[in-house]
Length: 264
Image 1 (cartoon, rainbow, N blue to C red):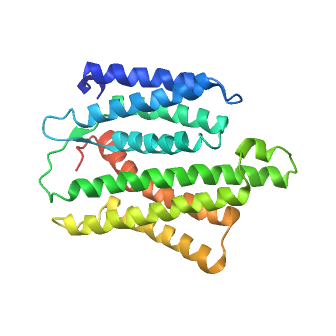
Image 2 (tube, rainbow, N blue to C red; image 1 turned 180 degrees about the horizontal axis):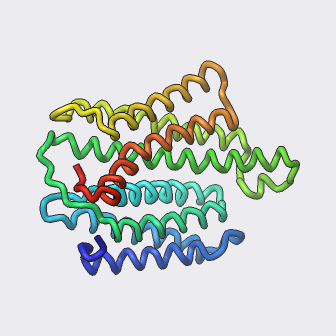
């Protein structure tokens, strides 16, 4: 647990959390200080994650918390890039709070060092899997903004453009661009997993990953063939993201925390 984390790594993680706390201080302003604090937190988050992943003597540390931490880091990366064009202070605060939780969770549950004896392509499978988590995480973030804007429109409340900073149709297209990219990366990760697996196992990770892939495939097919839009489409997105989250993070949480078993 936390005692297995090196002191320098812990110090960097605490500094990242402090920077994220400054970024989350206000949701209603676009202060340069808070925006800069988010970027600083992101940089320190990266340093903490890399140090923690490489701190195992037998190999990289793996577990539900490091993967969740990297996912949040990727989502913040996309937001930092997007915020150069479309500042959304409410999103900044939400992501900063998520960054604090992710960094501290990775400190408390750093996972266990895993000696890689599989195919040399196995690390690429892992990287693609984490990348798909990040892309779908960004898609979920945009979908939540889209749903919020549509609720405001139904209630005939003005100010949507002030909240979103972009037209709804553009936000919708952007949301599903991330879904498409995530689906491609997830497909590559699954194919690489099949190729590099020494022994095929129908475990929770495999089942939930395939179910998530099928849900995303159905979503993209429904959108292309039947024009699925709005809340109908975002519900499919949320369902697929939930299944994908259960595939690795959920199953590893049960193994590591509930059952106390090592990462496999």
